[in-house]
Length: 350
Image 1 (tube, rainbow, N blue to C red):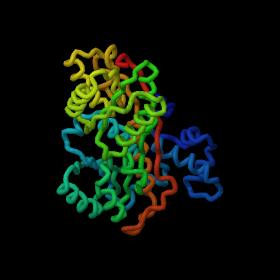
Image 2: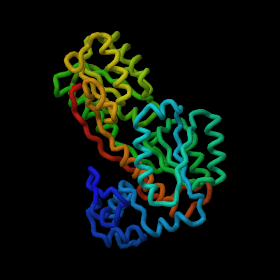
Image 3: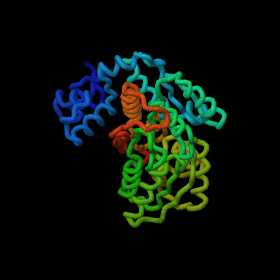
Image 4: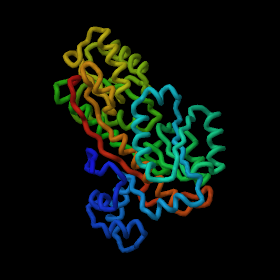
């Protein structure tokens, strides 16, 4: 059977694979799934994390999904369509979601909710229970939709919490640790004037990447932070890089909060006659196809986006299969957040 890079079979995850990931026996996994109290909290947490990460759906849950349901879930993107189709992140998320849904009767409905009118229309649609649950990606801190879903009692999972106090089940990558690794790598290469181009700072992941950047510099007693704000678009990467060169012409490295931002920065550096990496080293975040196709190829922090899509779907399917609470009442999820590790991939740009 074909294996993925993480050692999991390419088909439907099995009970044995969940057991191996959690480091327990098959019988222990079965007891956790069936709600047995004869399992320690630590073991239960490990099994539930493995179930979510692999997107495992027990046969009993799969049968429950087929009964009295709309047979559809919504993927909600509160962003303009132009950004959705420009960023590889979204296609990778859909890849993971689609792979997990392939073994269920559920259809995936893609909907955009970038404005107040769209959010209102979507809330009405979801409130009519035309879907069994919702997956939300790229949610901003002030977006009311997650709370509306919670009040309606609609199962929902969010990709990246809105804040440290997020109340919905969430799946994220280690944004802070990934940013620190990028900056520490640049410092190890002798770079001292390291700038950062942020994503939208009302997105929690962008905020955590900024925090990782700042603290890595502070711990190394390096040159003070040099930050320019972007919004995850290529154009904002160009604007931010132009601003950075004007403010600090001696900048010798840039950590961008996404590969798309880094691509915009690279264009400005080239136009200004700055060589990469000789004059200015460059590191992005995502490890998307863009990173491999830039000239020179871009060093980037790899976040396991496909696995995040699988994990989100696994958490959502578990919610859908569970008894539905009354509107306005929270679901009693014991372990409702999952943070997957990141990895720095070093290429010629740094």
